[in-house]
Image 1 (cartoon, one colour):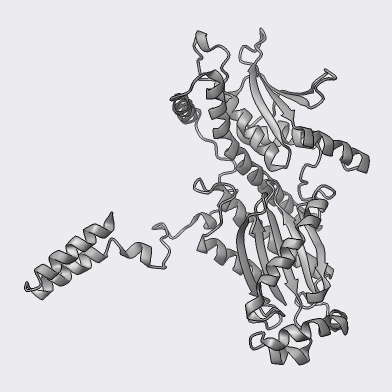
Image 2 (spheres, chains in turn brown, orange):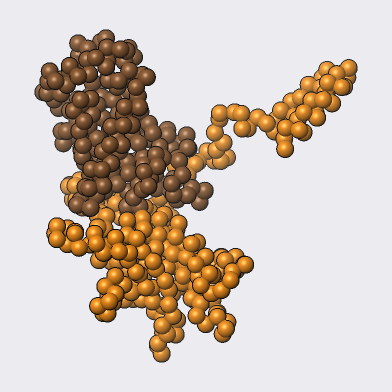
Length: 193
Length: 256
């Protein structure tokens, strides 16, 4: 499973980005998206396109963790959202790994075959087979276990976010540049996802 | 600023190149030291190796700052805001602006603290999904949040009253009353400025909290002395049009 995590300010300014892979069940923590390395902006496209749904859901659901809110089937990307009370949005895009036969080829760095098999895998039931294969956190994006793991991850990031916000040198809407924060977020990713 | 200085020292270095090489080396290293920190990727951490991310947010939960130091700091803040102001309204506006960012922060801190305390208590009750705090979606929960938890966080007691405007012309006005605001305890307002209420700072905090939750508001502080409470202050919360519209939509949708 590959993850793309982003924090957006209440006025849609990106404050923080991080791409990482799963560390559970033998993952090495390196993100392997289905896009070639030159098309990583697709993640940002997909994640930002879910903002409309976040803004719709935020007034219907008073929880901070809004769970899985959006799916982009062509890239089998699943998006979970977490809202801080002060209006910042934490969005996590997760993309299950491709079928085992194709991961061997594309695993070494998402080459050109990644984009061509992108459509094929989604239409030929790539999502369905991964869902059936196991219920572990790493493979099934909509299982309750995954929701719980994402919730734990978001809560931990929220704690660090509050610490950032409480810093007198931080003003709302500023990009979060602290390498310690980045380290803490990737540690949370290793721990829960 | 540092560039010309470095160049001149480089020049002097090249001029005095015939000097002892050891002394020029020393000079080189001494000129490079000031430019080293921005170039080095390393992070500068405090001597005890603890960054703000290593400290627990609940550590200072029950800690209270002394009233004397708060009074001193707040008096300084008022003096600072008073510089080059054109009038009382301007001064109150500045105090309001000082409080606003504080409100945004307190909101996150408040939720974090209620969340962590509820999750630690839920460990014993074996249910992990037991109510994390809810973001306020409607006006009343938001005002209750300000009246209760926020006031307790700031002043260790709840506010004294929460009222809705009775006038049909102004359904968007709410009032939060504090009989004896802590911020005004040691502020004595001169007679010619009797309209001034330094609790405008607290009004700014309230405004920050409302804005953070997505409720566009204007909050002002007004003196309303009674015989029993000479320092009674009313915070007038005026919600914007967009909030009232959304309130109607949410009411129809049955959102609490």
